Image 1 (tube, rainbow, N blue to C red):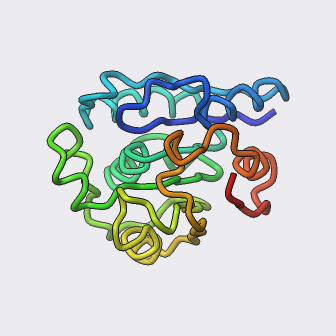
Image 2: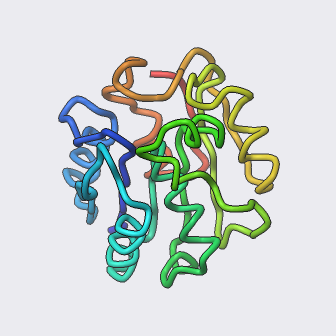
Length: 187
């Protein structure tokens, strides 16, 4: 059994059709321990409140963290601050992080702008993003993958990898959760 922590992004109220919900259901059905919390105030989140919540969930000892959108930045802030438990996670999947200029232009999430990317991620981390993500103009590889030195997979036409982009069920993310060598494909 593997313990998974799945973290949603801004304005995500964990709709049943979202790939994260499908992932949580499938992993649970396979007998894994899954924590997929509704983070407080997803429409107007507080970085400090979300960091407190993340610290609490990390104390439960997840093996794998899967973060989408604003929670990618949550994870980066936690690592930069040396939050307890980040180094104990075996592997991390960062999906569709929004870029600094986009976040800075949205008052509700401006405080989530990435910290200086001058730290080393504590364990195996993979970044997956659409090659045309409207929330990350310039691309996730240039914004996060290259500065952090982490492998990045860009999916053609996948946009923000959310429901608007057609990402309800996404079998590739389940495959990766079960086997970190599995490759990512579009829906």
